[in-house]
Image (cartoon, rainbow, N blue to C red):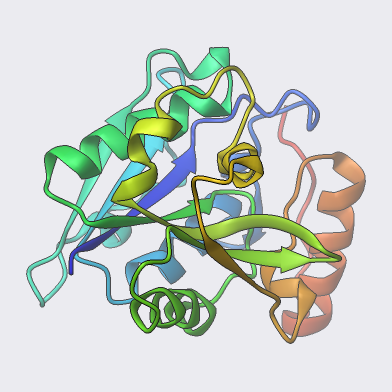
Length: 218
């Protein structure tokens, strides 16, 4: 079955105060680039990168966009309605994946820098091993969150989401059956929305790599 990645990188970063996708964790390794590299290496049939029309995409280098040896491709989808909320970005990605014949999508966020190919493949394997599941979502502190696998059975319902509603909204419906999986290390699903969270993410990265970089570039 065909599973395509949908990488949501079209957020306006209002809480951060600058476009966070381009913040550097290390020289040449941007916040949004880290998660994309993990998604690219997780064995997907293809990958849709949903971006904001005003993003200069300095984080999206040619190496990340190169087609894989297995023939899978990476497509950049500009979401003109991105400012209307996450739901519009999700719908943009799902439409592109559906048009490409995907049986499911693996949705990931551009502000989760520590997600790994192994964790993404664990979610994929959980979905593949249980026919009939509509979704498999990550979980942290009993809260469902991306990354998540959404079956094509959920695509129509996702088209009805509004504003900043994400796929979690669909979990309230009895129409869908799914599974929540918690990673052994919560760092794998850490997302970055505020300067304080970015400072903590940099602190962790520095401990791991011993590199120091500034906050938002003015």
